[in-house]
Image (cartoon, rainbow, N blue to C red; front, side, top):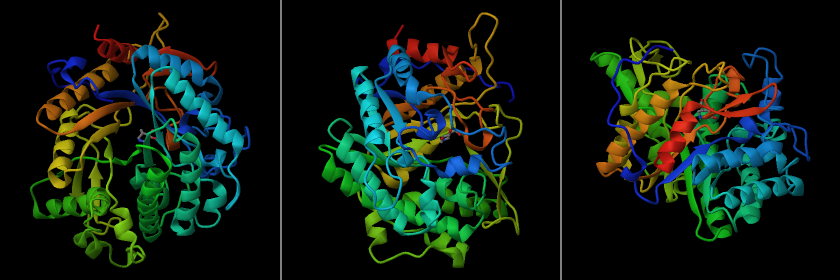
Length: 454
Ligand code: IFM
């Protein structure tokens, strides 16, 4: 982490946003629930990956995590008291199906039904994410997302969940960050299932997008007044220099990181320039797939953390492009650049390129090495500043006419940060993993004051 080098902008105020703007926090099932063996839940690819020595930095797993499975009433009370009016969660597929073609597990369905009731009782509008990376291991054993049959298995899961929760949950996100599912899990090998094959990753990506496209009409059929979208992790990009080589590398990276997802979702198919770059690694696409993927969305979810600087790197990786570590700028604990203007630039670009309709910030947040002070509090001033500066940038871009309708901070609570285990904290609420004690951090208190307009 490096220290701030910029001044604080005119502080944001809730009244500067529309009255019906949504204010939430986001979480995901594997990162917080724990109870990995309870009520019929089966193994996920993350249980398997985390149990493989060397895959998770502190050797941990999501087996217990924040024990949200049992402690959700306390977590939702905290969210309500913070003044949230929405809450984004994800559903663990391994709690619902234990075999291909089987019946949904009633205990799993009941858990999410109780969870949704708990949100509604506290004034939290439920935003359900159907896939946030915890694929059942039995599906990975048959090829995972690289196998087209997983699309059908996903649709059975989507059908079960939307039938059960569709009377109370209107907002559905089909997938969280398909880039990470495909590339980090199947090309970089840093996430489950830990594969390192570019062609496989692109096939995974295609099936994930296809499953999204096929899920949208299904959700609409099962849920009255459904609002359906997808959450993409996106970065504004800059070239490392003005050289023709670095600029070309940035465009190659952009083609896969941004356009590979947004172009097909908005009816333009996979970008031709990227198909030229990836050549034989292009996915197998069946007739009708691209039309299915291009189904109109009700909203686009944007997850934003930091911008990327791209340098030409001949012979390196599939794109001969390298993401440079930030230099001489403020960063968070993992070395991610703090760049509030990047959020505004990204949103303005998406609006300009695609006119996607309503957008929601489905994730934005910061990781710092928080500690509980002698006074029992967590004085996370850098996270408070991060939040305030990003909300100021959001206010400004919304004023310019970019149609963002809500913001979900990542995350409500500290949680299992994938390959980093519990070494990274993103929560507005601190978790003491030894005791499961929850403590609202100073950043959470600031969000509360902002939301209550104190
Ligand atoms: O914790 C993750 C989350 O699961 C997906 N988006 C990024 C977050 C921070 O790395």
